[in-house]
Length: 280
Figure (cartoon, rainbow, N blue to C red):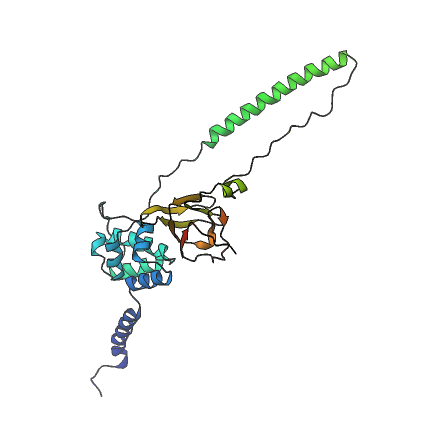
């Protein structure tokens, strides 16, 4: 009779080794974020400008060093922000961070190191109850006034031997003029300064992050355009652009539309001068 361990006794140890091998095979959070950034064609400077997360923190996270974040709460916030900037779902990365750093973090006091997404104040909705009451009162008043006026008119018509009119005169509605910013007019094209480069960016098919620099490399604009928003940039010789979602953008350079087949979600780096677009 053997006194040694049975195969069942050794199985837990085998399972532990399998789980350890799986953990080692899974790529790190920093590696996943770095590869996604490179695949999106973005530099660390681009990501830092788009997310407001300092460059040293971006470098540290891509090296799986979360100490500069200032705590688990801030590390999770940075992971979420950076993942969205490089078109990744942040939830698997946050779950992996929780597995590797002890689950959900304890509350951490606010610190100036946290520079994640901009938080907009909550807007209160309109008071619909008060609005409905006011509308009902206005309708009742209008109906009463109309009936009173109609009764007087009918009495006057009967006294004069005429019948009241069955229909009222139609009300003419004026159409709202089209938005002059939607397309440049011929006069706008002709008015583009010849001694400068003028670039107009319109978010026609969705929202997109935009960065614009002048010929000296100084930042002119860095932000997100919502659908329908437009921005115009001018410089004496050159304008550099980075489009976070080029497929959502319409471009007009020196008064002329740039006909490029940009793909949705693609990142484009463009430079325009006074002579663009070239004739022909």
